Length: 344
Image (cartoon, rainbow, N blue to C red):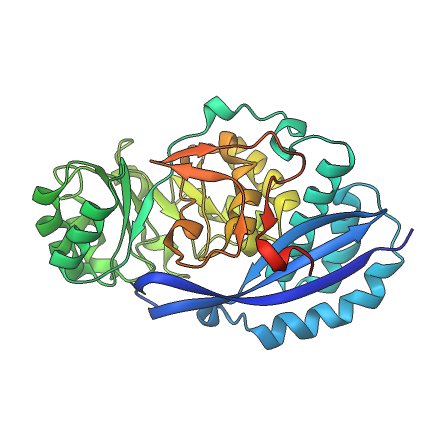
């Protein structure tokens, strides 16, 4: 039985200009793929992230190379397909993730079971997801929080000096803050800034230092109530053991590691070396969010707000309401494209 792979590019418009240390943007392009076999179709997603070297051209070129290969591959389970594609897509984890997630969607539909259920996940164990506030003036950031009440916010900052934003925001809101520095802090300022976080009701610090500077972190100085997480420094399972001496946890993103299949392996590995785990996302539609949501109960922290930041989500799927992930009982990933986009 042949496997048919199709795709379509969508432009995801953001509700507000989004600023992080890597720059500002008002939209992200994304590739939605459809994997069809035995009359059943599954969906997956790969977002374009320029600062990570991911472009529409690169994704399309890789996909066109894979289409003739995948057509006649023999597979019945997502793991079998991932194993056969991994060597061909080692330099394109985003596309590998899209195909892997589509395979899990296909597999769940084939056996008529939600992916979270077939993985043995318990929805009640899922932690609350944060809602991300991009860097802006303190007045605009406070307004965004007022417009979207949420129990936990992830605050994007772009330098050590931006700790002043947190100081100014704290009196305006009682919710828990998590700081994502996106590699923007300097080695000599990390722990003077870290010392302030407890009184600012911050419960997590993400990727303070640039990739390659991780060895300058001093894990013995970290408080259990304010763990330090790796994001950009942690792409796949090979990174975990190297980072364990310096970090308290890692942020797993499907597009960084290559999909649900390797994410499951990363979760086990991180747990085995005593690291906490966050399930994160890019700017992505409800297709991508629904894929990561299947693993939500396995994580200690969640950041699954990507689709909530959009003004034109082309899909529907798992919802995140006031931080709570609402998993669907629909088979597969529980997502679908809206309107005329349903068939790629």
